Image (tube, rainbow, N blue to C red; front, top):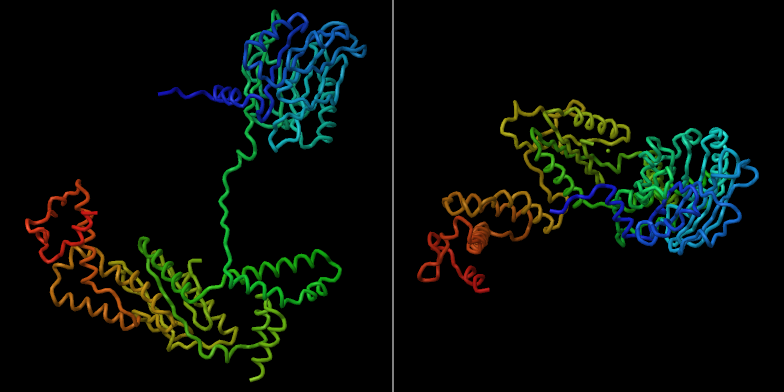
Length: 571
């Protein structure tokens, strides 16, 4: 198999593939010690080495150029040159000097932003707007610096710091790259942890004198290259390893909910009937309070309008929560079905109207309700519709503390709201499939009265349509009756089949619609199972289901017709 590439090899392959549209410019940093004497070697590198030919920037130090040297004699084909020669301010005549060469195939919009020459440091800063650049940056600002060995390092770093800080303030969205021969000076001394140094191997002897700084960690992967002529510094090829912020960010999963037409009409009606002037009058001249009140009101209307539920949803959610909890170990469920006595006759209007207002109802509608009435709640889930409330307690390891606390809190709530609990119609049902129930379950008391425990609750009192009841029957009852029915139903006695049929008849009388007979379910599932076995040649029972010589029945199942099986085989 193919060998796995190292990380540097992967970076090199990506750079060669992207050529002139890398996320950051590839840079060749070299101390040439007289560019005029090395120009032929540089041209040969560009001509015969693809990595140097496609390099975006050539940053050269100790060029030893003077004003007498024209650009045309030292500029390779396809590059533009920007140089900083020594001036009288440097106090020196020989050595030093820096220049930057920009590949025209990477970018041609180049401007010199700063240049500096003193006895302690020589630098030049160029700004490039390449043809391709990630959206993370607006431009590339590259500074090439040379600090002589005998220079005052503190003064040199201070001059470099002043230049970079000024440019960062004027170009906050640009990416800054600082390269050069620092001669034991460290830029991180003045910029602290803001910049990272990327060159990690010796560039002269056993010392790292050439540096590359950026504000992003792991932006570059340095590769050593041969020295120019008899120069004493190793050349460095800096390959961009920067990953764009868009690629660094993890995918975000967002759910988009589509409102129904009923919800949209409800919200439209809510907004049309809202007295918006009321919010302005209440806020006065405070624009922040006015904005907060409007946005909170709209959010509340959206939450209220988008969470419309029906009785079907409540029952389905109750059954789903209970069955999901019962799948776990050592669990059972307590269901408390609460009934209030004349809820709307005992309610206190003065407590109801503020709650309606908090829900976002129009003030005119609240006043109408008030006039009408005065004139004539995590392990426990509460489902409330009109005056019917169900507390579903999901009990684990016999700990009913949260469940009893919820019942006590509900008792205090209906006392506070002047509601009367009808204990005779309030029922509790316990669903426990454990084999060992450890002494049974303790009774439930509300206000000193014991709540009657029942084994079933009729769903018809909720007014559910027959199709919903049919689905409920098929999911909760028929699924249990018909589990593995091809295995055991054929061995049932007539008495057993009669008892099973009575269960189906009882369910039909409750639902009010015809239900499938267990005999029909048995026959259809047997034929379906036989068909699967006959089509699966690797099945262990495949040989048992070959047609008899008559071609009309299967061995061992004389009572089952094979017309279905024969037709499927013919297809």
